[in-house]
Image (cartoon, rainbow, N blue to C red; front, side, top):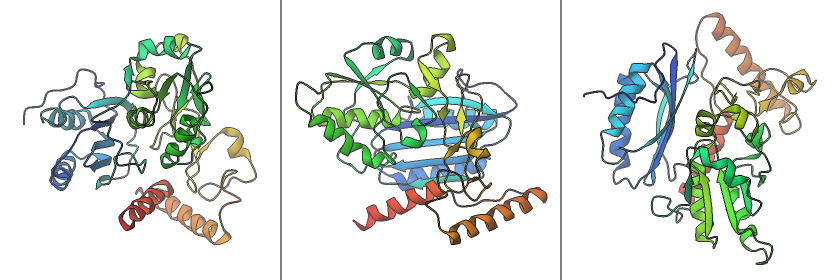
Length: 333
């Protein structure tokens, strides 16, 4: 395979992290799973790729040559020749292993009839985003979940207060059901990398909103292309890997993570009496049982022992466990 390196990919000796997705109707996702498993194993990559009949979504990490070869392969196919990719770097690999999974949806809204590959909102380039969201007639909507919004968002954005993306349609319908004189005429929607925007704007159009816009490439692309001194972003951006959050320069931010509930933690959270590394934090201390905290404490002990041996301890990510449960419920419904 001839490798054509993406000129936008940073040339570095550090690990390259690539966040990528595309809504595209796939006819044989099991074959794609086999192909991508074999390729990522050969390239010594790590991360997660989700495949569904509606497309591909994932974040992967590896050395420059590996990520370059992987992206080159995807863009050599008819399905993913124009796949959206955003890059970052880190001195260590943010993932423990490589997973290629089959799902009902590549981003779980629970509304399979919403098909962004056929209909979605109007893309707005990062350099034009500030003008759009400064328009007083525009409602700016953050499509992410509460724990993400808590550490940063665009100035003046509306927070739907969702705990999972599956709750977003209920919030959207409530907005659509408002009296005509109270409903916003224009919506500007954004998310981390662009994928939830695509699905949420498709939903908004389906339930009756005409002027729906979304930030192309999401917050991460905005950070890449808009100078910090011109930015309307406030705070940091939550990311779904060991960096926890990134700042406007796409460097690791100031937040840590509770390895019991996976919530981002500030310095004040870590100083709290409720915080015990790997066991509890102010966000989960009242929602976990003594038995759970005992189990978390044992896991933390095993992590420390693994570090002393120079090994990586692979535990269960509670957010992944929640997603697995949702998928199981989908199959049974």
